[in-house]
Length: 121
Length: 486
Image (cartoon, rainbow over all chains, first blue to last red; front, top):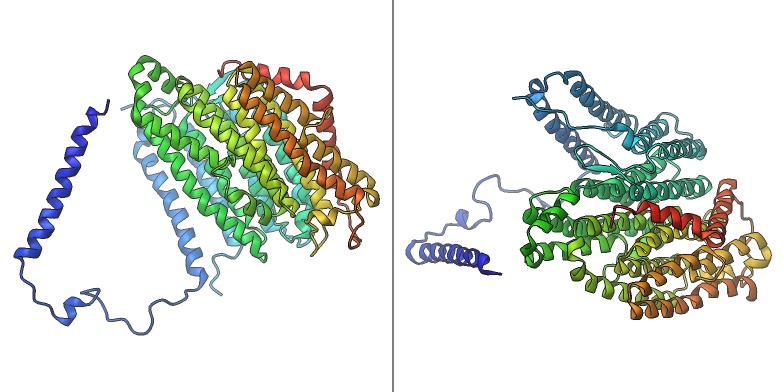
């Protein structure tokens, strides 16, 4: 019953073995020259000024959330546009479907706008 | 390359379409005409939407029609559940009309979210593919997460929403993983095709992948219907959420969870019944016992009703284990009568509170029976019905469930169920004892009864009495509804 999974077990062992071997080999063979910059958590980028764990205004979250919502809706529109031509004879129907979809989005947009979520004071 | 448009049949999802349209309208009305403290009209608009959606369930009754490439079906089972959900939504909106204003949550969003949750529930009951059921579940759950935390100034409400969201998201992960494993081993998401594939390949019956998938699905659905040991969230969430939403969760979400549970397990995984029956048996016993025993120790009526709702999930699981025709029909019957008695009880809880003073301790109920005789009598009817005393609906529901278990020769399960029912009488009757035989420690005065909530109590009392005295009509309807499912 479980014979089919034996290959997967072998595969996992090989994967683990190989990963372990590579890390171990680079640890043994490689040479190390530590400098202060290299030992810092991020080798590149600006040195931070002041504490990094600061409170952010909640508006950032709202804007980010709204951006995500509308951005993902766009993802649905792309494939629709790409295959639109292959719907022979159903063009108006498919167009209507998308209009309904966009219509619901517009309702969401009006809601967000009237609610004042787009204001930054 | 030509793509054929899938066979689409909008009339089948007419109730869902109407509910969504009204939800959007209520949402927009709420932001365009916000009348702070006077938003009751939004509730009435929602009621109209629910009634119209209800009327559109009649054309799809009694037929078995598929739509959207077999993703959705309008069969007796789905339509029966749709009617249950619409009744629950109707009663919930009705009890919200005074209450939402009292706790300052009468926004348009409140009513719109109730309708979106109802939409999700209806999709769950009508879905015949794993994806549709999952989408329905998520539509429902996300709306409920928000509703639970709508009382933003109340710490308990926020705690309730956060706990429900985190645990619910986790449970959804289990459910989705289970669906993925089942899809992976059968190559299809349509429930009937899964069943057909398993039938054509008997060696799949011992496939660890499907059995793992079934276990994960059990966890996912078990969380939504609050079975032990996946019940930990229930008391805290039910206690903290606005009372009207607690009623909605205890009845609607549970019914929707069972709709998905039954649909997936009976139409797709029926061949595995010997495997999952053992788990369900244990779940049923644990759920009934823990729910009833812990409910005894509660002093807060919302927590007590939360544990009682866990216990009721256990009774329904007994019928699930029985798995015969009477068992499944009795689940439908029980969920309907449970909706009436539970929403009724929560309505009384709502009516006994006032702004800033919710009176949710059982000791607050002392003397209520004489001070507000009709309210006390209604609460007594709901409590006796939940305890299963004839001639009320709850008794008939339990009677059908236990006779289904006996018919399927699960004698021990039926015995444990009846014993549990006997335990439950103690804490249900305790409320009645407080109402009639205890002197109030402090006066509860200045209650204003919202007419809409009073109507909800009357409908609930009528439902409980009707289903208790004339149960055969509804049971016959339920039995007709499940033909073709088993």
